[in-house]
Image 1 (spheres, one colour):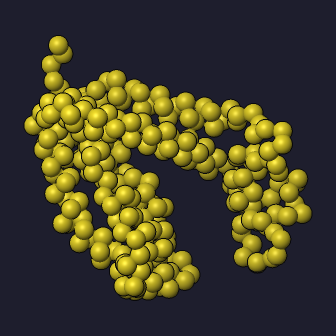
Image 2: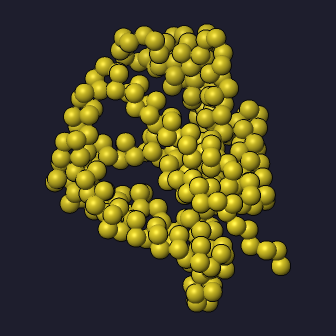
Image 3: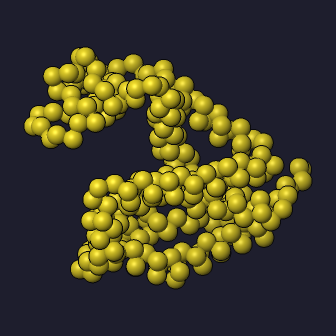
Length: 260
């Protein structure tokens, strides 16, 4: 039996935990959820629920994983054989999450490569769509026109057909390559074990915070940012009685049982 790998130091373990707390949802999902579910009232209730339920459950599962030094499947089985299904479902949920985020990372990688061009391709109109395209640099709102950013995403990147009578088309090799590299990176880190995964969080744990601060500064400097901040801290208490809002608390943000 292979010896159980250990963290080289406490800082490596701490940054690994931090890297699990910040992800894509902090950039595009959480602001939308706050906007959709009552603004400041949702944020206030979210903080309360995190302290009452989220943080205790986080430390509970963290302690179980560290104490047993086992993966989720074996850990739950060692607690009680009847709990083996809980660990299996956790593994299944992780695979589902990887299948969801991997295509997003592939698209992000494609945009990252294209951002090094002199003229951003999503900022200009392609000749075949000139009659319906409006350059993103143009602030004029026209009826029956589509922004170049949207056309680049739907027509150029994903090549969406007008209808599905002839199928969904051939997979794009650029996106397929990005998806392969994403899964290869995931496979490489997992197969190398803790020695490699303990080093990658130094980048993946600190870079998202750096990006968040940059996006915060850019967002605040934009016209109309004061209106957004005003709504963000405005309390709409009546929306907290909505059952859908309560589900968002637990199913979206209290993401426990993912850290073993």
